[in-house]
Image (cartoon, rainbow, N blue to C red):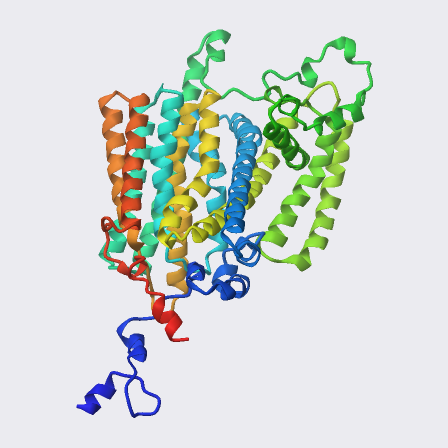
Length: 582
């Protein structure tokens, strides 16, 4: 009897079994998470937040966990004030994301679409998709060596937010009619991709092999090939249409994107009486007027909070205007600056290189020589640009600067979004929300905010079809970069030839709601003859509200979520035995 008893217990002196040690066999130790900081004693929290590897992984620029538990965890009043400060900083980052997307990224995307001569549908699933999914692309590349048990559920929650909330708001802001072929192609491919990935994980019972990983990764390239075929067929159709056109008036009615430079005076339209004037007239006055960033309407307001807000925006707007070339001058408070443009041709690529080497791939030793080489390469271009431009008109070559604007916006959006996610995760930990709940709410909203502002802004500017197409194109690219590529990489790097993938406690719920929403959108488009009205937007918002109700009810244990992975449930994550074993 004793031998049978000792066989199942780990004893040190072979005299008596210890029940606490039995927990090591009866229940595996959970992976150490930063969330367990709320279960520690107050005296231990600061050290854990500052030195724990799990908390350090959450840091992008600032360690908010360390700040809160080392500075603000003394009493209830200081904790409340620090939470308010974190929320205010979140609002400030939200505003910065909105400013970058609406005043810099959207005009750049519009200009690039004009340069590429893309129609709204193709531009939506290509240029807009790349712009909106830039944070996910960089995050997927940089996280190839990391394993996150929330990767699937986080990605699907974000895709659900994009497909239901953002697309619905686009339909609500600007109801429009869409071509049925493009609608069924985009929404149908998303439905296929989501269903196939979910089916693969179910079929493999969570253990994905090389063949299944490759098959999941091939769906996105197939979609791109279909897009290219559509572009070619559209090109042939347009070419045939031009050949049959008989008047210039008919040619001017060709459906292309409006350029953000149409209402701006270029050097070819400058009045001849200014041709003899100096090309550098008011050069410095024009330069310094760009950095007059004070919002005088808010500053002159009788409300103190508006005055403070006007002052807070000054340094942020100064940095954005210096870093990012502006592409749409008739919608902003400042005008074209020849000197600033020539400076940005050199400084903006250097900023991109510096951010990439120092902040993303951690190659600080190569930063200085690489930036020096970049300066040598771009400085002659700046000099040529200065010689071939004037202060009284935008040069003909300036629309090509939209490529630089697009790239730097992608980096800035990635940095601000990553910092926002780190900040909001800290707020979730402080408020003692579960890890999965943070992933499907604040993590999703943090990543989705940039896409929401970009797509809604594009819809308000008269391109709802581009914005709507981007909502579904970004889902395919998101699944490819955030789920399929990391799985394929892990399988190839694994010695066993397979990798364990978990949908988490809310992953299957999210997939089911997403698949139902996509089917409802397809049925809605068919029954309304592809007239996307506000009723469709209301339907999408309703589906997301239903998802939130399910998630919140699961979080507070009113109901149980779909799926069988109970290890991530808050009630099943017993921190007690982690403490007692120490």
